[in-house]
View 1 (cartoon, one colour):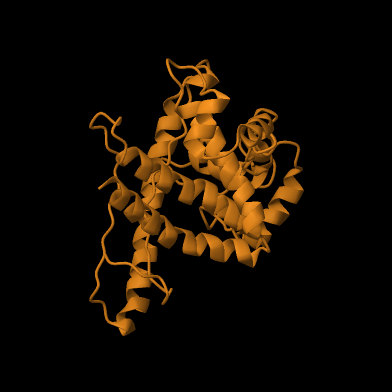
View 2: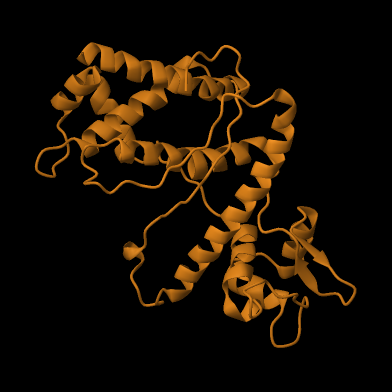
Length: 278
């Protein structure tokens, strides 16, 4: 029974890895490079999550759990401890400015919508917004870039108005890293949590609607409907997150902050060679 369960799990991961491998090959990343990342993840998780009485797992036990040699485990643990494998995905000044334009009460109207802002002068201005949340980026450069990526426009009076709540990064690899860290990782973490015996009946929301009987000619319309509905949902959740942020006392310690992600997704099978059943 144990062997059968293990094989079912491995078969599911084989399916899941198909789009992962497709991405890796697209970026010229082969098996050996990916295997190094995979081994690092095995050693890191086995060391930190499977210790006894709160202590890190020793090298011998990690070797037994992962099937790696003790020499390899030691090398990879040193790599992790030195920070070589850390993933660093930071928000950009543009995203920070756009977020706070929606979040800060002085830059929003009574309905919580971002106000049109003059570039400078007056009680509040775009220059004030950028000075507070744009780091060391000059307001003029920020205006140029936000107009270029299409998140703001300039109206007849010269005020700057928000036209998009988010934007997709310019380069494919930036978009890929953002999606992996902020979409794929939360979703897989959700699955890991919901299938763990240690969750104490505290399941995280995860809902998927699917059908096996949709006509091919209807997928385009459904794709458009799903895109619109998901956009509406995500903006509603974003408003709620902003509301919670506004309740936080500036004096609260940063180490009390939690990373929270809420997502929903649409899937359409395009891989003819992916073998599985719903």
